Image (tube, rainbow, N blue to C red; front, side, top):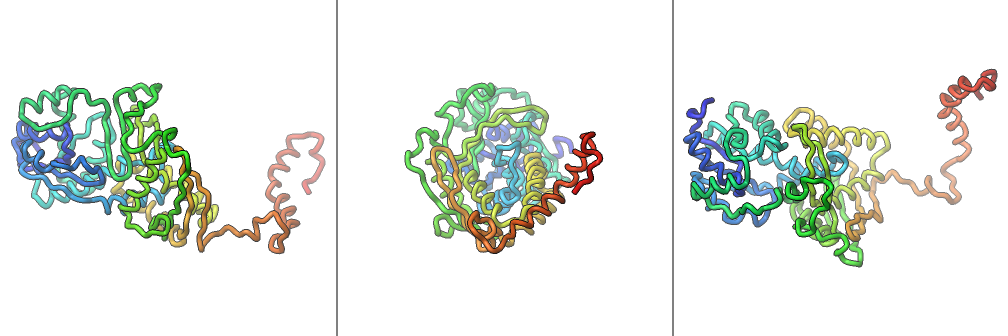
Length: 410
């Protein structure tokens, strides 16, 4: 589809500098109508005045959709239940928000009869892949416009100059240090002094969590309850998904929970250094894993751990809307039927310490595990088990030791 054939575009719009200048750029270069789409995934005050800003930038209208419930229930919780963690640390806060945003951007484009969609992701990052793979999976007939791969804007100052030339209202300045992404799950930081991975992040950079050393000197205790693998209550109070996560975010942030400093491998082939704040998510992952430890049998838990690595790659790489993710979810959900119970947590100066766990479906048997006298387990049974379990090792040793070759294994 040539530029002149594009009549209407739906733009994934945040109101930041990049997407603000994309609006007049699209009008200048494509001569099309622009509809801005903003997904509310928990970025809070960043939504204030967004519609007016979009219209002032040249959009015909701006649609803001509250997707917080869907985000938590259909994206965050399934990823948590899968145990997915990217490269040992990253809880995928930006990664699983992008397919949700793109899904609704596509739905709006189809409803409005648009020819194309556009996004403000750069050509260096992962988000371009996440947006575009979602569009390809859900509406391959739509043209995808990625201005960062087309325009002559190369720096933040270039974008500010462009905004000034076209009277685009922006609050950004050339002094902005960090690139951030915020939603209900996390806040990410990139750029600035973080571009040198030897540098320790500056304390003023953090916006959600207090420094662990500045956290309260007394620990906080809380209990998270789960029903079929879904968190449903905190300290006995039942909460819907969004307020539950908001409460865990608040208490976790006060105690310095969830700071992650990570050098990660981007999909496009380069390494990048980022810092993430995920207070509530860190608590949930710890609690959920602990409940798994007493409810799931060993083989099922190991199978889930193997899937978790691939699930994390799949989410990070933008392949949410694929048959494989659906198959993974089907397996994971089949393991959740008995994931009921409570986990007690102690929060202290950046640490999440599990101090208790219980479930009506617990496989832990005190009468089997006890070091005291018991009438359930016959310890003499262990002798035959060990002989069979170690038989292959014994045969190998007999072959390797000449003096023992004449012996027969017992």
